[in-house]
Amino acid sequence: MRSLTKDMPGREHLLDWHRRYSPLVIHEVNTHLHTPYSFSAFRNMEQLFDMAVDEHIRVLGVNDFYTTGGFASFNQHASDRKVFPLFNIEFMALLRQEQEQGIRINDPNNPGRVYFCGKGLDFPVLEEGNAAQSIRALADASHVQVKKMCLKADRLLKEVDQDLAVDFEYILKKYSMGLVRERHLARAIRLQVFEKYPSDDKRKAVFKSLFGGREARSSLNDHAQLENEIRSTLLKSGGAAFVREDPTTFLELDAVLTIISDAGGIPCYPVLLDDPAGKMTDYEADWDALHFRLMQRNISCVELIPVRNDFNMIKCFVQFFEEKGFVITFGTEHNTPSVSPLRLSARGGEPLDYALRKTAYEGACVIAAHQYLRSRGEKGYISNNGNDKASYVELGAAVIDQFLHHQTERTD
Image (cartoon, rainbow, N blue to C red; front, side, top):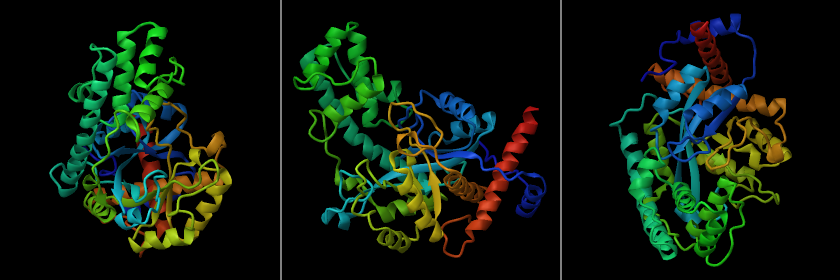
């Protein structure tokens, strides 16, 4: 395994080359994608990169939960397909004071719970470092809950038919790439029913029994939607196979920030922003207060999943945080069974305008510059405290274009 930026020219030579020869292009990017190494809409890395090439995406960011296991494969596919790779990770953490006060952060259903990302982690990963050990411990802790869910789901299935079964170890080997999440369990349940019963009538009857006498609302032909329904009905709060997470397994946000720092990454807060009714969480509704809270922890990077937000809301939010000097990144997640386009858009498929696409590209450039500098033993971009964001954008654009130019030359 080798960083694709390590053998690039030095900074001044790279910038000189870029200023002389590289056109000013705003490449299409997507900096937040889950892969099969956590749970993903994609069957494999090939499908992900096939879609990226078809949609002319030139920069992609892997962003799996609790694992860097997909980094090597992601890097190899990126090299082969001429798509610049960004190495990111996602965690779930707690702000216990906000939890006690009932304040929702970026999880609309669980006060105090916070999703948080690290951007531009070191690659290759130092497997025996503190960060890698901490990440493996978090993955192991998350498996404790999923194992208990598997046991409850297995008993539930056997009440319907003794031949139906789900087993954690089987799911781990058959359906996952090292990390089992509840979506894997929902998929295993669907496949068990489908493999045992070929007729739709019998399948409907089984799901009706599993759902406590209520017929499935999803079409049996829509596998992604049916798996979502299995998850929401059986595995979420109130479901017959639900197991509450042990709050002691959630790290405080400051501990997660330490892991990200140890892994060489940029701390990044993923913003939930507005729901279809235009409402925001308690933590995010006041942007001045949100900015203050983030800066208290030296966080100056935020990420949007624009497809879940109103276009005009995105514009206002981006303008506010750009004026504060923040790095802003954009992604699509793709952490459900449904396959949708990689190209960024606002809610309802509304295309992003040039200014938002430029913001998305500049955010990706900062991460690319950070990875380039880290691969050369330098500190990289940590926050806007003392860093000139514009210089990182220029350097990152040079890094990306050097990669794309070099990869094209290799295949000519």
